[in-house]
Length: 149
Image: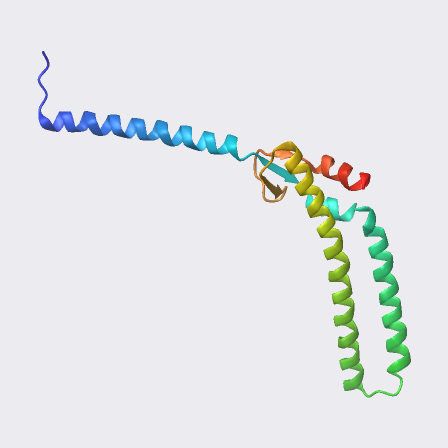
C-alpha cells in the first residue's frame, strides 16, 4: 500500500478541486453561449439602404436650400455679428432636422432587427464593427423585413 503524508494528500485534493473547477467553468460558459445566441448586423448599411433614406436626404436637401434662401434674404441688412448669429441659428435648425430624420429611420431599423432576432431566437444583436469573431449575420434578413414593410 502506498503511504502518503498530509502534504501529498492536500496537493492531490487541491489538484482535483482545480480540475473540477475548470470543468465546471468550461461547461457553464458553453451553456451560457448556447443560451444567449448572438446576432450581428451591418447597422450603417441598413440605415443607408433603408427605403426612407432617399426621402430623408431629399427632405434634408430641401431644408438646406430653404435655409440658404432664408439667410440670403434676411441677412442683407444685418451686420457681421447678426449674420453669424443667424447663420448659427439656421445651422442648429438643420442639425435638429437631420437628427429627427435619422432617428425615424433608426427606429424602423431597430424594430426590424428586434423582429428578426426574436423570430430566430437570438437574444443579443451587435453591430459588425463590434464583433471580432462569430455570431449569426442577420443583416440580409433584416433588410428583407424592412423592404417587405
